[in-house]
Image (cartoon, rainbow, N blue to C red; front, side, top):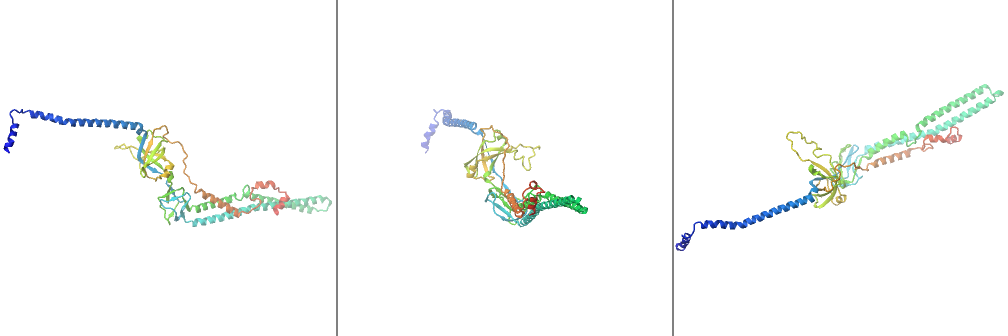
Length: 438
């Protein structure tokens, strides 16, 4: 082993070898070894720089052509009308015909209250109306009676006057005594007094029926008003659904005693929902009413898109309308970016295809290319209304007409005003007198 290694030592320690040759060759070899790495780093830096430039150019092009004309937010939620069902009368619940998640049609009876007391009150009011109609009808019958009485007294006066004239004509011959003439004159005076009394009675009765009919008589109208009130109280023991929608927040229970204004449940019409998108104040610069909007819902994912338009902006930020608004007049004030709700109306057909529920999250993208529209909404006639309660008044009027017709005494003069009747009936017309007497 020592013999084999000896030449190597001699070669290494040869006197002809230069001491600095090895140290000079080492850096050269290192430089040659690092040159590929340097080239790789330069290439990577060049590629990275090119990628940055391309990305910046792409983003700039994207911003100039698309991004700056679109305002997006995911702070958006579905909103809608929660129509509260509340009673108008006090009563005990005896039936609840709908529960949460169920659909009800406008006018369907949803809650029923015990109507026993209201039914009794309605019966009393109807009886009072019938009695009043009969009493007023008798006034019109008395008109005929008093008119006939006046005609009779006129006939008595005319007869007494004829007797007096005949006696006065033969008084000069002595056939009639002065006493008979005096008696005849007294008879004329008595007949005149009786006629005056009959006319006063007729006028007094006419004052109760003048220029009106039985149905329009004040006494009948007062009684009819009480029937109307009683009928409405009776009908309001059945609570119909004000609109077509889905039941939510049902709190009413059978046997519960409720009073006017007590919330029983809510009916939500899902065909009229909208989206409230809460945009930062620095995003509203180019947003205008009428701009098109594209939306997606988390519940359906990005494959289902909704389309709508901006219909208005809230009159204040959410913090301004909070129950406890922020107090910024303090020493440790910190600015917080405010958000303003923008209302977005959705396409009705898309809502029918993919219904949305109140409170669902939405992603909103407003296209602001056209920013010539107004920022403040103009006056509009947006009206929410229901006609399900109008039938109560019509039904009450029909019931009143039935009671009046059933209890009204039909007379010759009951259906037309007195002024028109007097135009054709003269006090001295004996044929009219005979007709009245008959």
